Structures are given as C-alpha cells and as structure tokens.
Length: 426
Image (cartoon, rainbow, N blue to C red; front, side, top):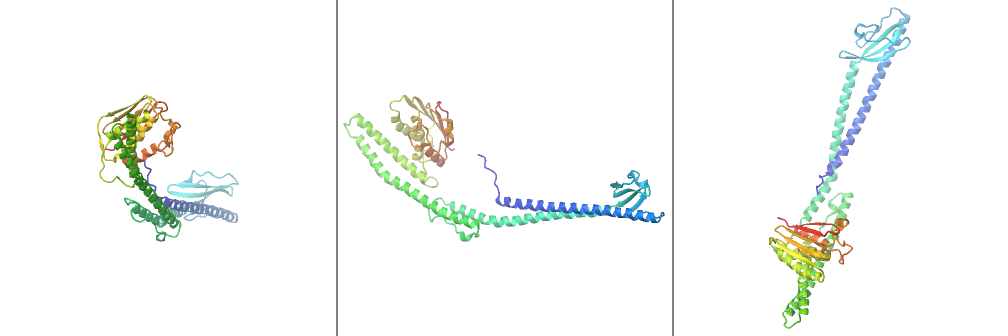
C-alpha cells in the first residue's frame, strides 16, 4: 500500500491566509483601478464637452473666434492633415473616439460646429501615465498584502502548531520505551500547554493513557497468571500420561488414549507459551531457534486423530530443513491452526504440506472459502457457516505472523480447495 504524502498542518493553515490576502488585495486593487480609470474617462469627456460648448458660444458671439489650442487640447475643422482618417460626425450629432497616433494616445470629440465638421482633440498621454503608475502601485500593494498575509499566517500557524509538535514529541519519546508496562504509566501535563482546545486534548489524552495503562497491566497480569496457573496442571497431566504410557500390560486402546492425552497436553503447553509471548510487548527474548520441519510433523500428528473415519491423507514434503529464529511455540500455533482448518474442511482427498527454505505451503482439496468471506477472514469471531469453532484461529494466526514477520497468503474459491502460503523473512 502506497503511503500518502505528508500533509503539513502548518502549510494547511498558511495557504488559506495567503490565498485570502491575495484575493482580497487583488480585488480591491482591481476595483480601485476600475473606478479611477472610469472617473478619468468621465472627466475627460466632461472637459471636452465643456470646451465644445464654450467654443460654440464664443463662435456665436465672434465669428472670428479661434479654436482652443494648448499642449494637451486643440480644436480643428476637418480635415486635419495629421488625422486624415477621422470621419466627421453626423449632422446634429457628436461622438467620442480613442485614437492612437504614433506613440501618443488621444481622445477625440467629433461634432458639427456652425455647419462644419469639427474635432476637439485631447492628448491623454499624461493621464495614461498616471493610470500606469497607479496600476504599478496597486500591484506592489497586492504583493505586499500577500506577503503580509503569508507572514501573519506563518506566525499564527507556528503558534497553533508549536504545542501540537511539542505534544507529538512527548508522545513519541514516552512511547519509545521498549515495554510500556515498565515504570510509571504514561502521563501528560495539561498545565504545560495552552488553556484552549489543545490543553483539553492533552487532558483527554492523559486520561486515556492512564486507562490504557491499566488495561495493558490487567491484560498482562491475566496472561501471566493464566499461563502460570495452567502450566502446573498441564505439566501434571503430561507427566502422568508419560508414566502411564510406560506402565506394562495396559491394553492397546488405553495406550492409544494415553498417547492422545500426552500429545494434547504437550500441545496445550505450547499454546500457553505462544499466548504468553504474544501478550508480551516488544520482540522475542533471548536467541530462539526453531526447526520448522519438526513443528510440522508435530502438528500433523496432533491433527491426525481428527481425520479418523475420513478418506483424507496428509502428505508432508520437506525440501529443506530450515531453522528459523522464532519461538517454537509461536510457530506451532500458526502451523497447527492452518493445518487444523484444512483437516476440518476436507471431507476426502489429500492435504499436501510442502516446506523449503523460505516458504511453507499447505494445500487441501476441501470445500474452499467463499469469496465474500475474504474481507473479514482474519477478524476475530469471524467463521464460516460450516465451522464448529469460535472464529479465533485465523485471527491468532494473523497476530502471530505479524509478530514473527511472516507473510500469510490465502487463495481459495468455493468448492476448489484452499492454498495457504507462508513466507519467512530472509
């Protein structure tokens, strides 16, 4: 499974600030520029209209009155040599045009004055320069506002994330202990954190850690106490069976029953050891070594009695006698549970067990596993319709295999048997 990329909480807090600052400042800048540009256009049009009316009034009083002529505003009767492309306005009407002549920009009011086509030309280069400077300043303001939003967002994100980072470091440091039950329980002090939601989180985490420690302690004591209390009667049963097996002149039927009792006592002792190891936290103690082939032979012997009266044969093929660095009892739990499942669901045929240096394969010709059971196959208390157990076997197999670093793969279809492959690490 591909691990998703790290999603930084700080970045998740900063980005909205930056986006908000940029959007708001850019929107305000755009509105400001639009309003100023629109106001300038209306001012130019108003000024041209006023000058046009003023020239008409002067011309009405004095037929020899001259059109306005300044560095920015000038009036001309058409045609104009520099603006030959200007078309006169319709009689009794007027219109305004934007004209680009060379590198200069003009606003032209075309009208009819005293029955002649007339143009009032305003050079707007200065106005365009002012608008250009305004646009530049607004862009700089948008950039500065975005930068300010980034700095503010970073500051606030650090204030928010710093206690979380501190809590994460404290949790990582305390949970790094090899055994969580060794020493005092994990505790977190809410007084060391802000009196806000984070402080309440730390308080809840502290209460949960205390409850979790109590649960782990009770579970550990239970596993140890049960293992200790059951080991003595199991050892007595095993020893008594060994003595009785050696007793002479016992009928064969009794000898067979005594061997079954002895074998199951040995099996129960191994299961108790495995459960105790599984209940412990951390790795295996010491330097264990397990001959997996011997475990297979013991599991086959323990399962053989359940096949009585059924035409089922167990074939064991050992290609390489691997020695694995695991506790024998835990390896036995995995192999025996899978083999007992194969025996339970095989009415006739062959159960093939094949071992090489890195793989163990158990194949049966039983009724198989329906496809709809695979999502919950390793869950506790999940079992098939034909199962007479409690649905714990494969759950235990999954937990032990995870502890040992083994990979368990099950392939099956309803009515076609089941293939279980166990891969040991290199």
